[in-house]
Length: 417
Image (cartoon, rainbow, N blue to C red; front, side, top):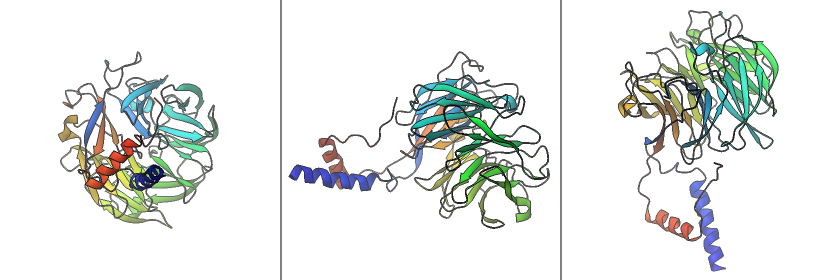
């Protein structure tokens, strides 16, 4: 009975301590490791990891997925061991321009016990893979969005509508499609979803699903060709709703690219135009600017970690260094700027980021070294992993750890592969 009491007490204490792993004791992020990317037979970059696009963390498993154009695959990384366990191939790879290359946008949908990877490709193709066992991806069906040679790019998933909102950003005009996410094969439910009165070259970038409003939001680089761009809202069936044009809100320049939604209900918009800012938008009513975060711009992908309430913004700082800036969703204080350039990763376009909510690690794809952009930290390219430093544990924590070890409690999560 005494042993059971100890076990029960320790399990309760452990549950309380680990309900949000490491959050209360963490300090700052430091480089944990770099992950070498295996070279496939389809590699078009001389055996280097030199061309990539969007990355994604499956919050249910902590597996990391990155669109690897160098190897014409989506690379799958076990977030617990930080190693590549599989590469889902069959994409066109890096072509003459990014507008016709692939893979591009990626997302994982967990539906009915099945995990499905969806990834955009050149030729206006959306490909899918069964990744219920991430170490053994199985190619499923593909669907065309009808945009000719141009790529299917960034995308977002609506659990309530069970559809993916995917953009053909390089077409003129840019448009989105809705794809049913019921496995095994994707099917097109709507296409030619456009921003009202947008110029042909206006583009569509990162999109998100807002469960509070039941609608999609997408970053719009430009509405009329001369404005600062903004954000467009669409219904779950693709009907255009509110437009938020930043020029009418006092923003002179932005060119929105990245987009996240925080628990606050506000949208954080990464400006693709260098030398500008990152914008926080309250989408209620006609919309209002909550904050202008002037320390980073030139952004592409943004990530929001619901586990710790922080936004992670790719971009460039005032010195021209590539950075990942971390802002709290509560007040938008800058918590840390991870300078990738001073870490030895160079100044190439390091534009992709994802965060594992299970252990707080940040994954950043790094371009191989070149004459124009030297990279001394991983010359053939890699995936950099940053982890938070934790202060020395107190005596109570050490005692709890010892007891848990005696009880045989050695892990707080399980992953395949």
